Length: 241
Image (tube, rainbow, N blue to C red; front, side):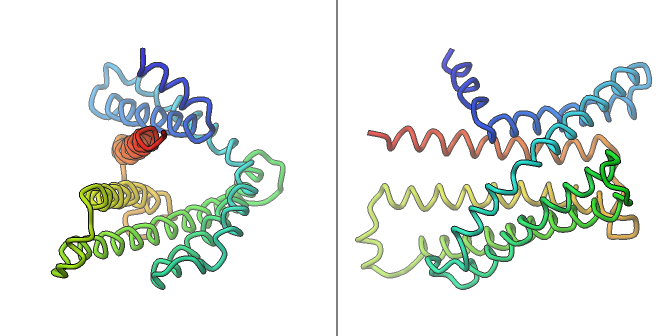
């Protein structure tokens, strides 16, 4: 009952619904792709699952039409990262915010072209939005790897003063942050592999993945994201008086 209550609570938020739709969509693509390619007897079921996956992806595209303002407010609030002490993290975060901000209008234009609201070729805009997404993922990977290195160095610091001052709870908090950053790297790498696949042919492995592999990578990324959200929610409940 607690799990059902938690799921209902998560679905009340936009991010919670988006995670569920994303996970379900990629799972359908994974299973559908396997059935179509590996099990001809079940190919009709696989085709239907791939169609469902496509519709769920389209649903997320529609919902992202309303994300620009939220992204703009976040980018504006972060600014040039004046409160961020680490220069590398600050620069990477600013560039990542810029890529994310530009991603949305590019995707909107591509969607509008597909729906004939705009009379233009959508392929170029889809490629541009995918490239911006890939750039954001790459920057996120770089940021997380840098944070892991910094935090590990902090834990292994030979400074006796640091060791005495660091309480058990703070030590655990650093370890949890390292774990979170590692999971972010793995999630972003899975998404980055798919992002390159969706770029125009001739770019690295673009267009080479079968549907089931795209579904597998997306499912892994989605499940890691769900796990991180659950863990973050659990920590927030634990610290609530």
